[in-house]
Every structure is written in C-alpha cells, then in structure tokens.
Length: 65
Image (cartoon, rainbow, N blue to C red; front, top):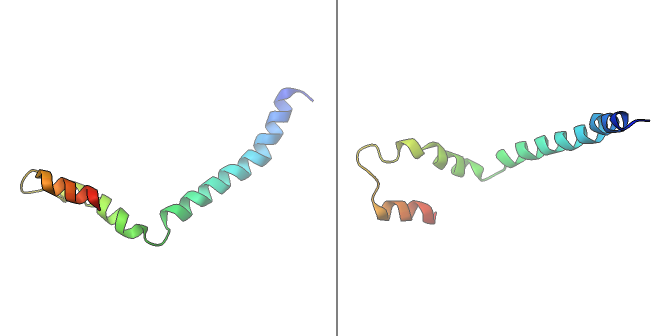
C-alpha cells in the first residue's frame, strides 16, 4: 500500500469521526444551559451606547460581569 492510500483510509474513517465529534461538541457548547444570557449580552453590544460615548465607569462595570 502506498502512502496516499493509507492517509486516504484514515481520513475517510477516523478523521471524519473526529470532525463529527468536534461539531457535536461545538453545538452542545453553543446551546448549553446558561449561555443565553451571555449571547444576549454580546448581541446588544452595538446598541449599548447609542446616545453618548461610553464612560470609563460604564466600561469597567460591564467588564466586571
């Protein structure tokens, strides 16, 4: 067997399984309980300071959360 065939067999089986496992893990990580609050906070970033620029104490308060 040549090297290409060996790597092809590994990629067709084990790497496919590993990438599928990574995908399932990423989906579970994104939809884990408790992550909704984090994603809602991130989604509101463009709308936080519509009226005026952020003050230093506002930034420190947000970073502390």
